[in-house]
Length: 205
Image (cartoon, rainbow, N blue to C red; front, side, top):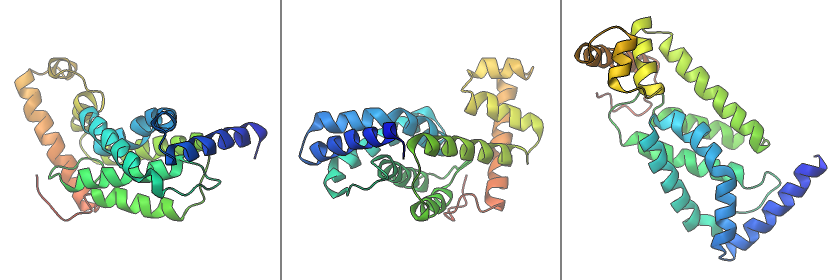
């Protein structure tokens, strides 16, 4: 381990010790360090919308505040535990939904099971792997539906384009775009269920 990483881990260990002793400032520093990447690379791709990801991040923080006393320090640092809490929140959120696009509760549970057995890596590498996993998941799913459907989903859901802009990009009226997007989501859900993507057996739209 290089000296810079070693020093950073030692500072983090001290922050964790203070947080466990009741320092909210130390805990805020830890969450501030890893929260943005957790939101962008872990929660947002899996729960599928900014609103849901912000809600999941808030719940993650609440659970961390409640459970920081149970955290045991290791050479892996604080980030792997924080990521695990976030994935558990994502599982709970996805399990409560009827509509699933790219990830279902079962998908994230399997991911959590795998990561719990893997050797912890540096936070930067963990974030990179999360980004790559999200990209691969999305591309695999979208490649299996009609290209026009895939583009509708990219525009409206992934890129969060306003309805009128998305319709204009596909050269249809907003009303026609609504129909197109509905069909696109239905096609994607069928692909997801066919490959076990919802993982929860709720089977509904």
